[in-house]
Length: 432
Image (cartoon, rainbow, N blue to C red; front, side, top):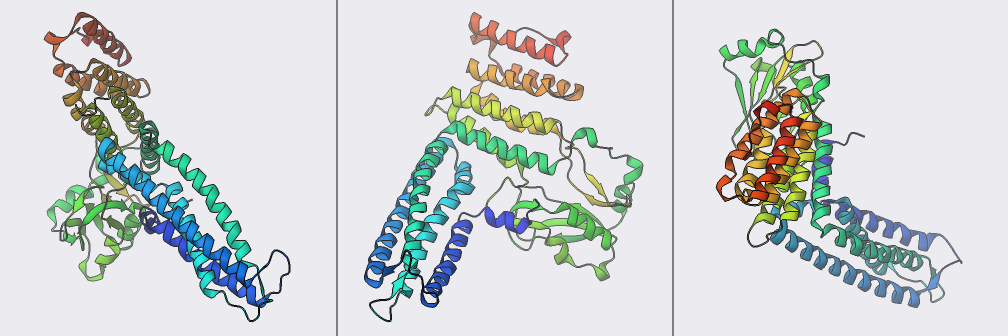
């Protein structure tokens, strides 16, 4: 199911789901109050005094439950901030279960509170169904509270956090990049327009506000460009921080009928980065978790190894995608959009260069990096295998051979030799 980009951005905000649940609960409370005064029900009803007691008790209890939940969330966020990475806090806050649980608690509190405000009786004999519904709602809230304790217990574990970031990034890759096997290629003669437009002065479109570029509606941009018979060049990349007045697009077309706002509406900017389309952000979070684990204050190589394996899993998928595509044509094969070209070796370097720098003295970390390269090479083609081997030489250059003990040297040599065989570069293998 395709979700509208605006809804995707809204769902990334922590307040959206709880606010939605709160509004629905208030409307449900009003509907229940109307039901109390318009329909005579003699089953599961209570009198005015008991109704007020029940609703006031439920309201205070749910407020307490909500307060405890917020306090627990703050503990989790503090843990993420101090032990993992400041960027990972967003993953817990934007998780659907976290937002849904808070939404249920806030909704239950508002439902009971509004019912209490609307509760009034014409006589002492008046009976009400709404307190019974509030009791049922509170029982549901208790169930959600038990689930919340379990949910927090899982999320506080770094292995589950790494797994979540990995899966979310892979989903984003599969959604936004086509397989390399399905790529027909960008033949130069098909995109001759890209050379021709260099001789023409473009129309520059500037960012109306500052923020991180979260999402580009590429298909709509292509269609708009086709309708205006124009060619568009995207001057910014996903995840870039755009200052107000920064050039977002260069556009070639007839000035008299172009609506600049149409083009800007396809670019969604926010205050925080997101992995909706920005896969670099997911990789950055995994790198930061790995680096934090390697820091002297933490010194947790096992977590670092888990982070390296997660990076390998993502890069394995990424290597099979068509990253280098930069020209996008319409259905008539006319050039419409030019985007920045990306290369797999750039992702490879960005994922490992800091880990190599800070973890080069730990044999287990170096071995994990070589193993991860072997995993990537095993599931991809000859071109990727060659890139992997060339990158492994960069890692080998940083190894301090003179400080290696004999067993450590033998262990790493075995790993490197296996990688050379996997990448079909056995003739280039040299022991440390």
